[in-house]
Image (cartoon, rainbow, N blue to C red; front, side):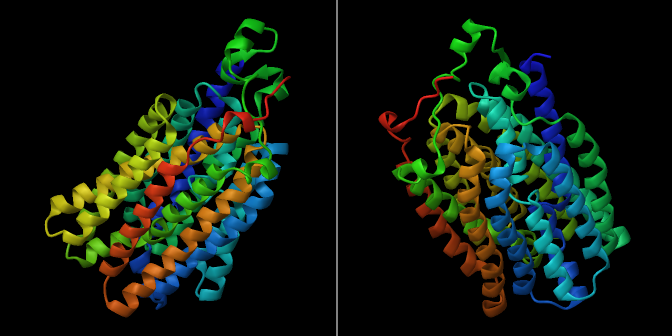
Length: 417
């Protein structure tokens, strides 16, 4: 089968994986803040530490997973991760002690699927199968994240309302395992070269297509080479600054509910957020293929800044609506541009290893943001101070992203196969 067709089949499977894992995504986690804190009797900051535990353990595991995905691909790793994630979610649904919850959340993080829209397990394979169409391909595969969020926000709220938060965790776990494990274990492959093919639908026997595919001229950066470039550190700084407020985003639903908005209305508006998130995932992929990617991501920073400003002055439903939509559009751009920028700047050969040392920076920042927001709430009685702080953090990230120009051409290693 030509890599053009097989590559798109892989995109479809990865999109399903990204869809299913949103049953345990950041959007959904926010729905559990109030019922779990009330039932178990824990503070908002302690709940934030649960999210932190998941992010930190995920940051640790990607050091290993990044290298494994380069060597083995995702065919084995994704089904194993889905199994561990599902079993841990079932455990959360039956746990009564906070120490068990911390253990289960950490195991979910170690499994590697519950971070950044599936993290490196779903994004690295796309970069390996596509070069010229990389932005569009990443948009399509990541589309499942948005569709999953749109689907699972109302579904999860329904599960919680009708069956309670404990049974909701169990039902979502069954969905994840039944969708991901059989599909991923049968179809996925590491990269087209393993099948005698090349990225973007070209064949090794087709020299004309090979010359046009840009594969010959693609940069090959090792981790040790990449860390000596200015762009490497600026990109890391930008996404560290993005991650800190993003970790605190799990409190956004609780904020709007406690502002006096009906919980069902908030759930509906956040579904619209997820729709905008979904649309922007595909749009961002197209934009990244056509415009300098750092400018596209800079637009995402500007969007979340405006979203937080609206949160501070909110007094009407339309304030919530515009704020939530802006946040969703910006988040949709970010989720595609992260892997795209690293692949665009440093190539696909060692992308897993490079993401294995850069993604932990982002995840660690997210890990700090969740409990920090909770502490601010516990000690001030509200979230306003957190939103003001995060506006400044996002603005600093915007400046770093604008300054992150691609590495100079003379520093690139040229592929000569």
